[in-house]
Image (cartoon, one colour):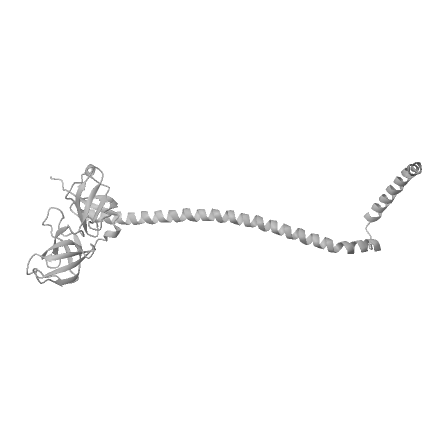
Length: 275
């Protein structure tokens, strides 16, 4: 039996090769029609081809979406970082613009005055509710000593009460310990301006004469009678006049021109050099 199979082995191989070659030749020729068997096989396999095509297209779409989402995520992170950088730049530019505007006004104010002014930056504030002070970054190394007046282009701020080599402490005029000689700009009547009023946000102007008259809207300026503040520096505006039963006549409530909650830079009035 085995010998018979081996005897027909070579002829069978030759026949199979001939059939395969003939099939390839027959199917490679362009034909207007296909055989019935080819049509049946094509119809049977078409649903599977459609399914494989849809599945392949679905996975290709998902891979493309994942790649697109990954690209969008990376781009979003880049944009967020860029936005943060731009916001920081805008914030810095706004600060620089505000500082430049203040310094320009301060320089104009200094040019108009007859005294030398030293620009100082506020670097600290008193944490105590009972004392209103600020700390500035100029001290004895810059010629600053106790008793010097501190102002802004809006009005007077306070007085230097102590200093180190590179810092100074300023007692604000709204502090209860502060008292400043002033006068009513419209009439020239003298008043004493004291701090410590209404939670240290307003001042009190007390008359130094029974004939002194103060009305709402009057501007109070420095009298120049002390050695601290030069004359005619703005202090504030009268917003109310309160009658006093056991004093000369009244006490005027003065709203200071300086906003003490937003102080960033101040001007220290330096002593004039003797000619």
